[in-house]
Image 1 (tube, rainbow, N blue to C red):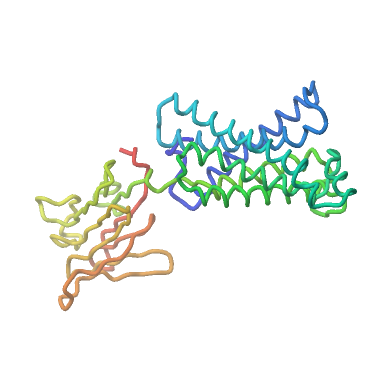
Image 2: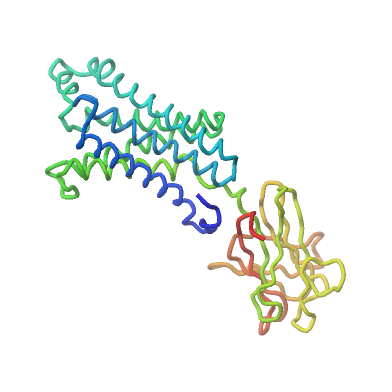
Length: 335
């Protein structure tokens, strides 16, 4: 993945999910291709091979995406995804056999245990625990490679992904379902994609630490001029805007109604951005369904502040002809 191809919008929360879904679909296609051409496993291994391949591919892809986004060394981009994928695949296969051969038979009668051992039987109550185990196993590889960071999120996201994948697989293959194709080939494809998409969305997302805030001039005077709020070091900073000729980070002409020291935008160590009004002149922050007046109030001991989100606009000067600044979140590698 390339951070330049993931804009800071709500779509970014689904970017990794679509990548993991694509990896799951490719794993399904590979298993299906081998099973059609020349399978090297018996029928009772269809389930563990399918779930192990899909879960391992999704786990490895999640780690590969992280390594690529953070621009880590090539050897880490190769080794860590392989370790995560291999570990997850091994745990998923072990979990499948643990359910079908040890735990499952204890929970059902003799007839139920026989049905559980039947590899050709499609029944949600017999197969859903295997999908849940696959989801949990899928989370262990990335968690281990990430040194236990986000273990609860990974575990809960993996189990939820297994549940969603199993339900989609069953609904798409169930002959009496109006939503399904009554085709286990399509069921496997959609179930794998659903599990990959869910895991990519729920377990690990693209962190805000890869982005930084910028101020961009929207109006004609100095149009498209932009300055960064923070740098690559992640330290707290404050940028000042006005028409004073020396010492400011962004100069805007006085004839446009901008005061000598008009507004500032700051970021703290937790990457929280705020705008601060520094003048009696009109200063307004506008966002969807909200308007914040930051004009300095002399009766207050400190200037007014408000949080900033990507896309917010700061209007400096008279309402009829203001100078407009836009706050944007861009990749930290942006220059």
